[in-house]
Length: 113
Image (cartoon, rainbow, N blue to C red; front, top):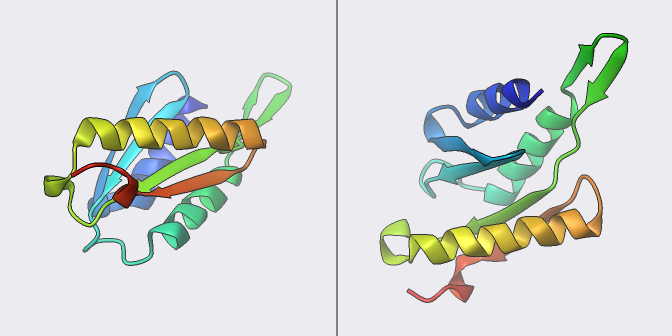
């Protein structure tokens, strides 16, 4: 299932950014502002495509539910990347606490430059 999720993220992101698995069932996607003009809409679209994934393990059918933490910055060159990752991590845990299928977004303006 993790392979299917990773492949779907990679397909949806395409050449617009970088995606990687950060551990467990968590993935990171780094997108450039000039590649994604509407980040919230892109993330909503990504959540939708992931929710359509299904696989079977024997007689058991598995479906994906997604919780996402999203942080965006006008320029990653001007932003502390570690602070950006921490903020995204905090957002994803807030999304998970809110229930399945949630997205929490945080402007990077809350991160020191």
